[in-house]
Length: 183
Image (cartoon, rainbow, N blue to C red):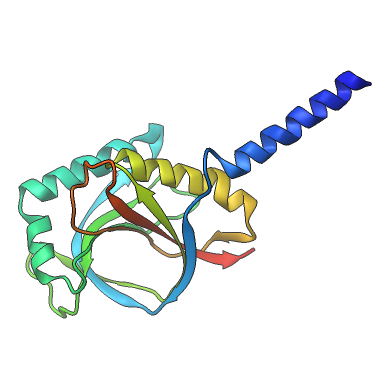
């Protein structure tokens, strides 16, 4: 009987560890009105974790071709955004946009405008060098946070918010914005 009790305690301890993770998640829930973004997009696939390689490559291309510099010159808040658009549960891919908030009404050639709808957002802080730190936060959100809360993902874009700074620094801070609704 003692052996069965020990096994039950170990299972409960393991479940608690899975929900709490290695440390508490830093997040807040906020309401935001709709806003417009401008940027460039690419299609990515989730097959075999390929999006974890395609998105950093797309960022590198946009740094090299001047896209991020141009977005920095026309944005309204100083941040660059990575946006996961057009996601559908039954599809293996989505559109990824490197963008910034804007009040531009006509995009320059090669750029497009999108409206991010008004949403309730769970906003998570990521600390550390990119892309590893933010990829780790995404994993924890979907593996730990969603299962442990009364929320589910809303059918709206997911945002990565990148303030200016050294994205390779151990103390670089950025955010993941997940649109949520109550279950």
